[in-house]
Every structure is written in structure tokens, then in C-alpha cells.
Image (cartoon, rainbow, N blue to C red):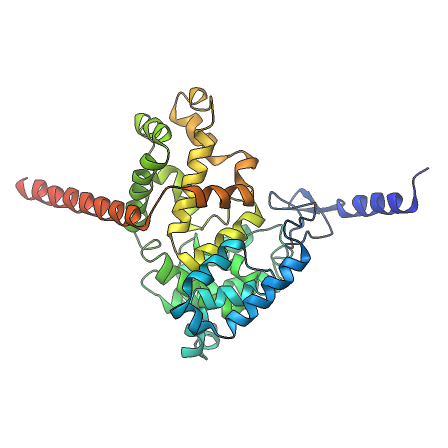
Length: 361
């Protein structure tokens, strides 16, 4: 005969799986990140770091945040070290706001967000934003309701950005970034973090033509030659252009590609160290998705190769594996700078040759 506890667990499980959303069965009890179902749902609680260690880290972060300017100007290495270890969940929203410069932007323009959300916005961008609202983490408790506050705030944040930066307006890849930020902080703070990410961290990514993204794809491919020569040769032989597999990774900063715990750790480092973190995560995925023994033989064409990259093994996406392998990559600041200069020069030369050819016609 089942014990009371076992029976209660069974009852909870049966209740939790009885709800249906858009034709999919979802839980009525959210996981620790607020997901009710879908690929991001995490059923089992995870405690990698002992509570006593978490408490000590929280205290260190609170001291650091209360003296932020000193640490960022005089002891940045300590900030970076603590971001790499993982920011405690209780201070993560505040830490992200400080790290990306969102706090400074908010303080400099205190009333701007409330002013922007009252404006109508460009009908073209407003229409596109409305179409995309339902697609952002539909199994998260914040966005599951089409008329709920989550989707309303998401609309306001994206509309406000499209008004503030009319040159870019709205790009579909900004929506998951804004939704991700809204899960962790109030709308005004999320807005200024989004502004900082789009205009500083990922400058040029969302402009028409996405030339900056294409250059970064070439840089990624150049770095891959150093990190995993066999994977580099395979992709080059099959003429698999970086833009075919890295676009969503970079534009959405892996919010659509990794398990939730891994995304949080990646963002802790990304907001501290910048876009090179996206490169490092991408290199780990490329190296260990395709570089495992026997995998390349199973990828005779571009189709199989891209299928592997779209569905990496779960083991290589685990937060501890990703962070460990990122730290083991034999890449220096000089490697990034050299590859950036090399690819920029190559693209400039190609454009110049194109103009000359066009002028001769």
C-alpha cells in the first residue's frame, strides 16, 4: 500500500500534468525558473553549490555592489572571477543591471522610459512586435497568458526601444532578450539593460544587412581553426557558412539554445566580459558536437552537419561542462584581436575589389 507521501506525490504529479496549453500538456506547478513545460522545464531541483557557500557569495556580492565603482575601476579581476563562479540568484538581477551599465543609463534618464511607453511608436514595428509576443517562452508562467502582465510589459519594452533607436527599430531577435531580462527584473530596468546590450555589447548586430554579425561569423570560423582543426576542415570542406549555424546563438545570446541553468551562467560572464563569451560558448558547442569520435563520419553532407549543430548532446550543454571547457580554451585576447583585424581587412579588401569590378563594367 502506498504511503501518504507517495500518494500525495502521485496526486501532485497527476494534477501538475493535467493542464493543456496550445495543445501541449504542461505542469500546473512551475519549476524553479518559472517554466510550466516545454524544453526549458527542469523537473528536478539542482544544488551544485552548498547553501553555506551561496550565503558567503551573496555577502561578498552585496559588499561589492555597495562599492561598485571602486571594484570596476580598481579591482575588475575580482568582479570577473566572481562572475565566472556564478552570481547568486538573490543578487543576480541587481548585479546584471550594474554589470551592463543599465543602472547608469537609468539614473541619467530617469523619466525617459515612462515617457516612451506612452508614445504610439512606428506602426510597422508595433505590428511586428505584437506578432512576436506569443512566441517568447510560451511555457513560462510570466508569458503563458496572452493578456497577462508579462506580454504587456514585453510589448512596452520592445516598443520603447524601437522609438528610442529608430535607426534599428525592432529586430525579431531582440524579443527573447527582452523577455529573458523581464523574468529577472522590473520592466524599466529590463529596458535599460536591453538598450545597453543592443547598443553596446551587440552593436551592429540588428542593423539591416547584419554585416557586423557576418564579420563575427568569419572571426568565429577563424578561431575554430585554432581550437578544433578537424571540425574547421570539415565545415570548410562542406562549405558550411558560419551564418547558417551561429546566427541565433549570437543574436539571441543563447537564450534559445541552452538549458536554463547554463544560460544564466553564460549571461553572468557575458555581461561582465562582453561578446567574446558568446564566441567561447559557440566554440565549445562546435568542438564537442562535431569533434566527438565518429561524429564527422556520420555527417557526409551539410544537412547532417547542421542537424548535429542544431541538436547538440545534452551532456555538452550542461553548465559545469560548458564553463569548464570555456575556461580551457587556449585563446588569448591577442587571438581575438588578431582574428578581428584579419577578417575586417579581408572584408574591406573584398568590398574594394567589388567596387573596382563594378566600376569597370
